[in-house]
Image (tube, rainbow, N blue to C red; front, side, top):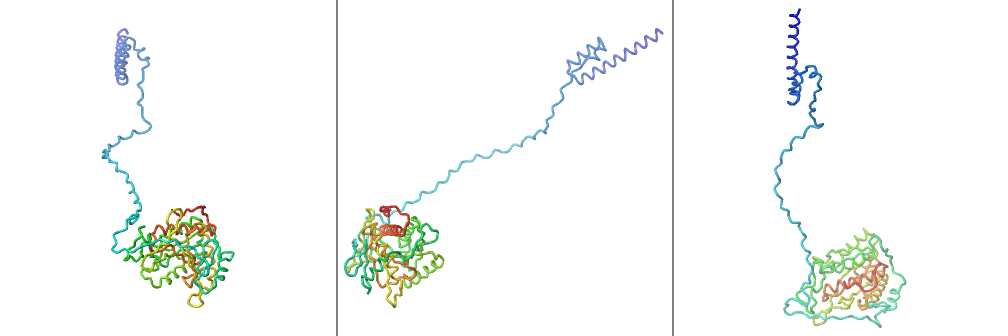
Length: 384
């Protein structure tokens, strides 16, 4: 029996030793080296205490909730950009006189120009108005013309601030032009005609239309060159144009055919009708109202046009004294049967400058705007 107890004791010791080795190996695999050394030392002294020893657990590896982003593929750096300069608009060239003032070109044997301010007429053959006058070149008596000219109201009604056109401006002889320098000489070889709308009658018509539109009177401006390439039948062509506008815009009440005159002395000296507008030189203007002659000039309503001419004449002379020459009432047709507000207006003559003519056109249009009840400030503002 003693021998059997020794064998059992040896077997238990051997089993304990093997368990300790196994436990130490496991600790070495899980714990830092200082921990398993301590565990081994305790086991050698007291295996039961070593088994009861609480071992620290290594921290669990931290896993990101999202997979780690793959490293960005490096992109080649962009080539350095040289900032292009911001384009700047070229400065708008300023218009210059052609030629410059007092710089008429060298002209072989130039013609002479003289300025004259034409006054109003009186006596036989004239009808004196409150301001201005009418020259009677018909077989009707002055009293007959006076009765027509002094009718209380205009033969039409213009609607201010309407979007519907009220006035049409056109040019039967659109290529008529003016001097381009202020010197009192002209080139005899120059026909005083051009297709350049900045220097012919279209420039005057544009200024007049601008004034009227600014005053709340809806105005159309037609720039057809009815006298180009042929001067013949130009009134037939402008009539066709006016009729097309009337058909499209039945609201039209006034048709103005804007021309310039051509005045010469017997010796060839050209005469420019001149006045002052706002202290500056301007061309004088003249209205022409046709009269029916019973045959070749069929204008049954000529008195209505004359009434309009007389009212506009008075308005111009009251606003800008000296602006007008007397209204001409004569046996002229000029398509004035198309509307009771049809008139022809001569703005200066071929010896005036473009600037003088445009200034006169603006002054005439301002007076018309006042007559029609448009929005025009007082004073002489047409000099611009």
